Length: 180
Image 1 (cartoon, rainbow, N blue to C red):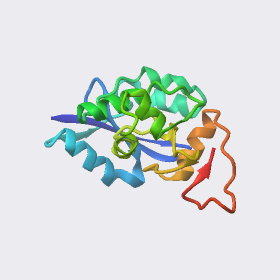
Image 2: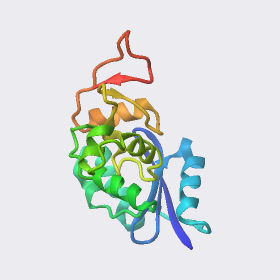
Image 3: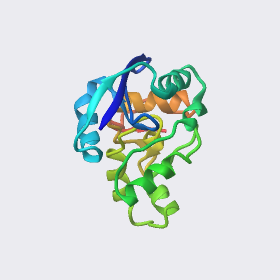
Image 4: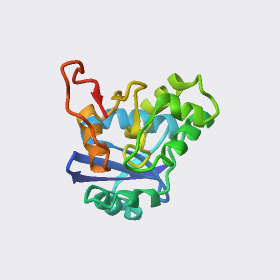
């Protein structure tokens, strides 16, 4: 199968975007390209990447997001693959409004599986489509920023960009845990 890849610069560094010609299949930071390729292989065991510019206008929409048009990424159709549960989690992530956060437990409860917060967290970690499937909007039960594959500084930037007030690191918070 042929997949289309575009590479473009953003305020968070170079972004890699992969499309199947209709929907976005992967989006990650260039410094995590190996991770992105591993996640793509789970959904597409055999594929070839063809470099292109702005497939389906997705790169333009992402650039608009970074320029402040936060909700424009909601128009990007996605195809993250995954199990039925993973697809439910990723679909639910797209319903979290910009400027708000949920805990892993709150999302699990919304899905009707209140004890599945760890499964939600594991699914979040396997999200192949950063930013557009906004896994950065999930926080720990204590309100701390935790577990973002692109790094917590990027997670903090994304949340602040969307209007979330993120407090500074405190003496009680390590660089891996930032309160919102």
